[in-house]
Image (tube, rainbow over all chains, first blue to last red):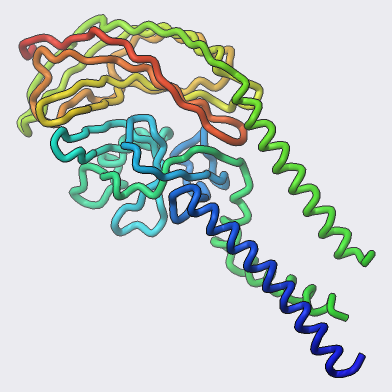
Length: 173
Length: 167
């Protein structure tokens, strides 16, 4: 195989890699679009919704404009906390004239609601519809452990990337 | 093409795909189930009914509920989360929903429930609109599967009313 042959081979491999990466990206973006949420999947990080959701489970989200009602399990962000929280809505007040909804959440396994239990920011009494990242519509057990391990022990992430790179390089021969 | 790595990769991909298909089928089988729950809730007593210094009304009640939720369980059901909420409207709010009690039913055997309890969570208003207020009690359930899609629905029971005066 001459020099140009090698170059063609390299170009072919680079193209197939590019096609693979872009098709994964397209599928991810399509999923984001269909679910209405920026992050259509979350991993359960705490035990506050046990025994229903355990640490390491994966939750599927969906977001639409329909108003929050009690019983919905929502994922939301609180100012000052970097991880999103997954809890159930226990109290809803919808204002007549503005349609604005104030609601209160609580983890199934927590003794107190999120206001009393210190989950909300200081002085925050309610959540609003705009705080919601999505509503939980489905769930897969155990699959999220891979993500948790890679977050909590980053060395495993580097090890994995290292091994995969080694495999890709060695398979060219 | 027959190295260990290629074979392990092919096997792993195949296994994961099969697992995903099985989870999807398990979840799909839940759609074939048509739940037919029955429930009855009575307000046995209004224990007290006060207005707090911050201007919000609060009432404590004793509830009696009997329900049969056995038809909701399928082989793919992990648990059913049940809660009772009071629903009412006020001049300020077109809808208020306050959860009074919740519980977890871990299996079909435990799905015939009978409870007699004061409200587990505080029944308080945004403001003081509860005197003489008519309200609905809704029994909500949330079927949480072993894998896949979750189902939720409710039964609305109307005709409850709070006393006209604080006590």
